[in-house]
Length: 287
Ligand SMILES: C[S@@+](CC[C@H](N)C(=O)[O-])C[C@H]1O[C@@H](n2cnc3c(N)ncnc32)[C@H](O)[C@@H]1O
Image 1 (cartoon, helix red, strand yellow):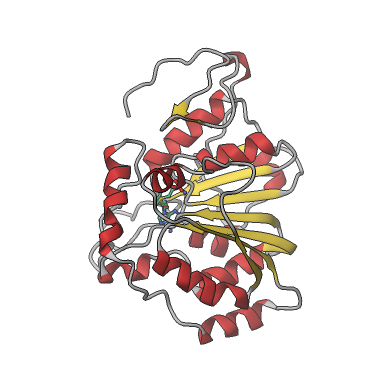
Image 2: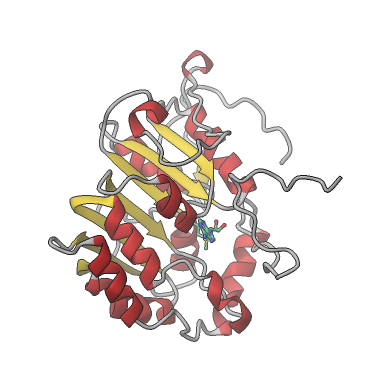
């Protein structure tokens, strides 16, 4: 990414003509929001944010528009945005820093790994996931984020009464989500745009909207009285996300790439080159 010119205080940036949440503050007030070295094991939120507050996580945050939205509108929350792509996290971090969002953190880590390895059960107030990649090729079906197991991990991460927010522009993904999410969450479809962001909470949402594509939004409250063991058992009964994502919808992904700050899909993991968890150490050299 070429070095960006230092923006002047008071600047409101536009993306596709829609203001990016927040405003650039004086450089003396810039924050340090990058989580460069991911702690091993379970994360201590109070240490990570330097204060105690409800934790809200944005998984697959892309260029961070939705993470900024959450942090700007909720100074009372600790907001973590994560994505597997370093380049998009750099955009998100730069903007969070320049807006002085001391209660935001950005990290390169997969959503599933985060929930499985680093999040203490019942420690998160809200989990947001906007436009998870549908992955059109049948060989990539295993890379889809929203699976029954992911949902059981999300349920485990949330405090009693905690909320999961999901959104997609892919009808196949939405049909699948509507089928499996109610097992773990009291599920509600959101008719129309979120009231706090009529033009869209995320970059992908704004792009899909400009192309006249339908956008599917929903939120759920974690079901009470569902233990981790029960949630796992339920997850095993549910179908995996093998839906047809409809290749004709790939055009929007291409447009995302062509217009910068894009989540270009990385190479497909293979047996020879398995996916490396971003927080894991590089393999040791053989002597
Ligand atoms: C279609 S983009 C949507 C980005 C953003 N949420 C938006 O709505 O504009 C999907 C994002 O999810 C990220 N992603 C894909 N798999 C992921 C995973 N397992 N964990 C976290 N992020 C993931 C991609 O790198 C990409 O930035």
